[in-house]
Amino acid sequence: MKKMMMKKLSSLFLCMMLIVAMALCATGCGDNQEQTETESPEAGNTESEAEVLGEGAVKFTFTVVDGDGNETVFEIHTDKETVGDALLEHELIEGEESEFGLYVKTVNGITADYDADGTYWAFYVNGEYAASGVDSTPVAEGDSYSFKVEK
Image (cartoon, rainbow, N blue to C red; front, side):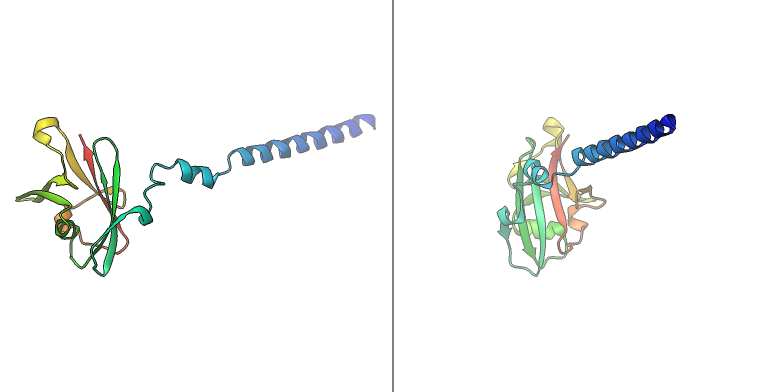
């Protein structure tokens, strides 16, 4: 009888320890949203801090990331059909026309010269490397476009 009582107490104690351990794990692994937002590198680049350009019906976010990782954010309002036309309208990009479309060499006054140092402007749509050139990518309401200097 004493053995049976001891087994029950041991099982109860083990169950309680397991519950406490699970509670501690769940608490330690919890997502602290306030800390994440504060530490996020993009936390300072909200739309309210973006420079607003244009007066068109369609709005999108355009981010420029230079070679040092500094970001400049624009909120673009346009009636243009392509992202390239909208950015050219506001003189945010410059480049050369080729058989493949516009080869962007300068973004927001910053030139990336592949021939000189192997850097170029990479075009992204909603955080993904773009499947088409800036001059053939249609503008979509609320989308996010960016150019980043890469090697």
